[in-house]
Image (cartoon, rainbow, N blue to C red):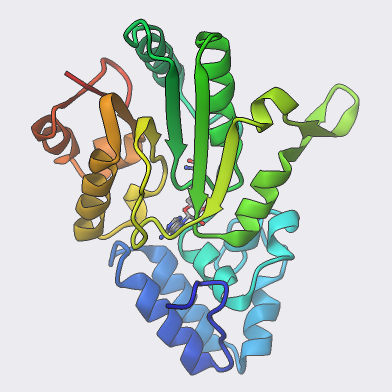
Length: 274
Ligand SMILES: C[S@@+](CC[C@H](N)C(=O)[O-])C[C@H]1O[C@@H](n2cnc3c(N)ncnc32)[C@H](O)[C@@H]1O
């Protein structure tokens, strides 16, 4: 089966077919899907379609993919990947977790049984990698005498190459600058291009973070993915989700995870083995 990156699109009909295929797994009421069909219907050929997707128009129809991916990622994407980035955006940031989530994660890590010599965490999907690096830093500071492994998976090869570089544009008191991830942190984090709706997750983890993704999915896919994630959890283990998925979109998630032996930690979206 070809990857998204390898999927060649040579006509508007193929672009529509591609969106049809991706949309099958996504929330059927998503306005992002309607927006992209609308764009395909209004352009005269695929060159014009790509031209529209490449514009700098901010978080709007046709340009939100580039807006959230950023120039570094966007320049490496094929047309199929650009369409996908408009259906499920690469939105991410270095400040991914609420204070409650940070506190719950910290307490979970420090409470891990004595003698936990190795701790592994997964960020899936990881977009450009900031979340994986942030988790690695937290683990590194919290568990100084522990072997730490953090993995990041994302379907976008453009995002994964940016993640592997570990360099992020930022703004500080000097103006525009580049933030370089510390080499001690970089060496414990590994990134891989992976379609997490299709490819098995072979490894097992002490923490799995799946944030800002479930909410994009059709209910059946969300259930399937949660099941896959539960099977990839070590015991003790924990799953970090996000409030949109848990409190707005799929209100069954807490009960579902409870049936798998995971309870929600107070005030946060971290689910921990009982
Ligand atoms: C909104 S971002 C969330 C990133 C990160 N978890 C965060 O909250 O900062 C959603 C990511 O899902 C990725 N994605 C979309 N479909 C995917 C799939 N089937 N498998 C893996 N990643 C996927 C996109 O490339 C995008 O980077």
